[in-house]
Length: 627
Image 1 (cartoon, rainbow, N blue to C red):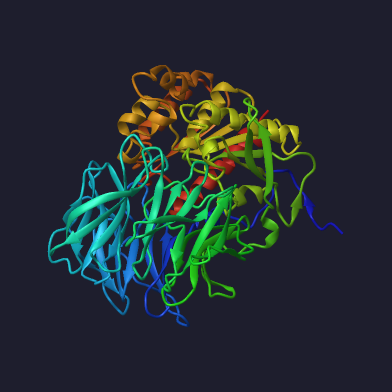
Image 2: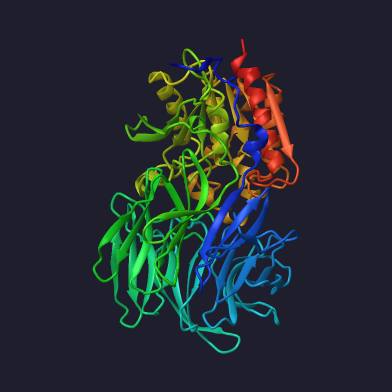
């Protein structure tokens, strides 16, 4: 017997309120503290990063209080903290590094306020902290006395960017990854190995281990016994996990990526895709492909890999391995499971921490349905469709649909939890995640397909997604919406310009509108990104003009909502202001809202709640009830 009530698509009453969806607790990293199996993780609470501790059998407790915000300060963040023998060193939003003790310690600054730090690493002898430093113009590797008794000392400089500094167990060798403009870290990087001497330690020699200008290497790690340096390196289409025996200099592929990835594009510092166990024999690692991730174990002596059952989770990140046993911790989620901190004890999984959105009946979560369509070059484009879902309501006919374009563009939208998606699918909207050409997760050829074509192929694939919905009778062709943020917002604007009438409305969050000014105004990390995605200036000036939405805004004839953070350093507010001023002259429905104090990606609970409410009202007025 069907107990559901009939109600118009898009107007279904839902228990997912704007306020509840806006309470977005972000789980950003998890690590083991040495000695007793204690877990540490970072929770983002309305824009503030809080370091949390839980000992086995004890209640969780916050290690940082108001006045602190644990957050890596370089680029998009990441690399928030490290721990060693009862000590935690963390990066604060103020730009400083702080030290605190796990047992009733109070945070003490060990660096002055100048520039910013990320990915701190405590030396095995407990005396020094190695970290990435940036002042926004120059990046380098720094080393700091853990007591904070002196200024940080420059250890390595000369490259444009650094990531993943690591100590050898003997405290006299360090490894790191570096790269230079115009590369991004997924294009090509170099793994370096250096020897230290003196007090404070100084670099006496260094050499490259792996990586080329067109070969990316990431996440160096030393085995606990100091015998091996491991790392992930591109093998062309996928990645390999490689072991380098330090004494002999011989290297071998331990896990060969073939049809799966071992790494993701390094948009942030401190990403971890694998980890050594304390016995220096076992390695745990993550495989991912097509929006799904799985956990594996490999024995370095036999080379045998075995999968660990992590159902019901479909996406896992930030892998941490205990040095006292084979316990593993990670962040996990699925389409209907909000992010969690999960611990695997060798036999079963235990949930350590939940995000604060686990209050809904299962009927509010849609099943993920793969959807594919062909591009004009006959290549396959990938998407994931989520139908409307609500335990109390249903409708006749076809639903309105939101075509979701992820940012990056060198990124992906995996099969994972998205509170915004659930907010709208629970009200009767369908939702389609588009992993357009150029997305990660589908092999290097697919990722590189957008080279010199950003503003063309991404738009074609977004339009192809709309037609796929129509042809498969998954959405009302008169009620299609396109939504994207950052690079996705850029695609939204171009799709509206070149295909008037296909989408009833567009939702653009901090989207790029002018490629010329973006090159001048964006942060250092992406200052040369457009060289590979569009082309170098002045040679590619015609492309910059043809693909910059602001120069063609007169063609936008559909309703447009634009949202922007006032302190966005990646896509500055001027990008939104330019397109809004241009579209106003068209006489089309337009909503423009700037959120004070928000940057690139909204973090405050009140901002998110207001955003959901504003978008819902906008879509009701200009999509559901439009003439």
